[in-house]
Length: 184
Image (cartoon, rainbow, N blue to C red; front, side, top):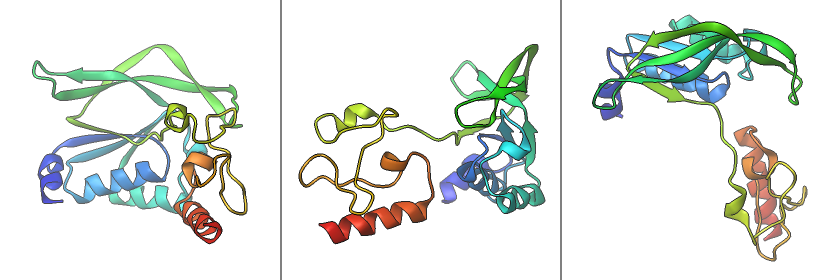
């Protein structure tokens, strides 16, 4: 933890994302002594998946919210150290599959935010190849598992949490673990 504090202290930090993990990362960077913390999100404040109290807590600490900005790349020095985050402004278009209005890049709006540390808190997706032969997958690449016991299509293989649900809450993953444990 002390080493992380040395890496962050006095620096300008960008956190990419709008969910709970992004808020936690932004708050942590601030508490570790970052000079400035920028939360970069490509949609609007109202579309952020983080809870309202998490957003307010980050704001009350002094985290700068850069909304409607899409990261497009990194600016580095000659030795590979981050010097900036390349961004483009966005506007909200038609709703996408999530039901939220899709961010559309505004042509000619590119700019660079000078930071020396970037944290990508943008979620992740499971790699279906990791489950090849172990379980059947749905159309999104998530493992199919019984709702009451978390059994997969393979004998003795159980699954829960994000690999079954997609991005979700920790308490749901814990519940999945309990269901699987009872079934086992």
